[in-house]
Image (cartoon, rainbow, N blue to C red; front, side, top):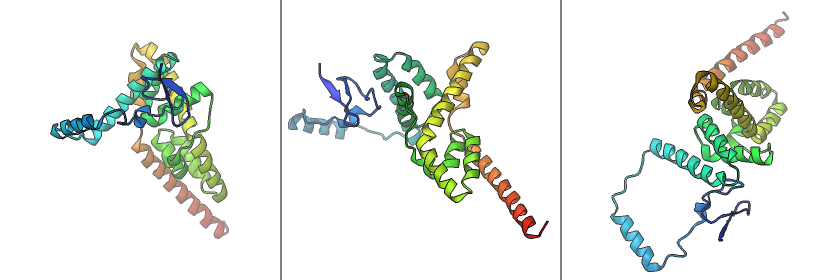
Length: 229
């Protein structure tokens, strides 16, 4: 049996695997046309040029990529860990966007008991990232701590390191709540998760509002100290 070696983590995968079972790397990206003859390549190029191709819209591409990723990634993990199929399905219902980024990390957290995973947006825009991913109170806490120069830098680094894990824990909490509610409501838990999950632009405005209120309170407090009150 021919095995596919993941170029990222060197894990051996089945020949028909589309994603690495260990790290989620897209194994189709490493495929080339080396096994196709020059004549066949020319024929493929000619057929492609004669095809009436229409580029999908951004919305269609995003939805298609997310659905395809969930399906392909799940199919490749079912044989090794059937329970992950249900977990990925529920996680995906809550996360909704950037599944190709978050789901492989969630799988690592669950199967390898890891907590560390770097997230650049969580590092550079810590309060905004937490609020956008519906972890508003984390965002408020990070924003308050960021007022202190050195502490703010440390908090940003910790957010970059543990942000994905905190999001994983938040997702699992919502999944457990949805499973309980679905029994009482006699409905699919994914429907409940779809309503609670995803991202929130409204939280960003709430965060800005809280920041404005805090800045006003801080200004009044400093003015009061300066006036000797």
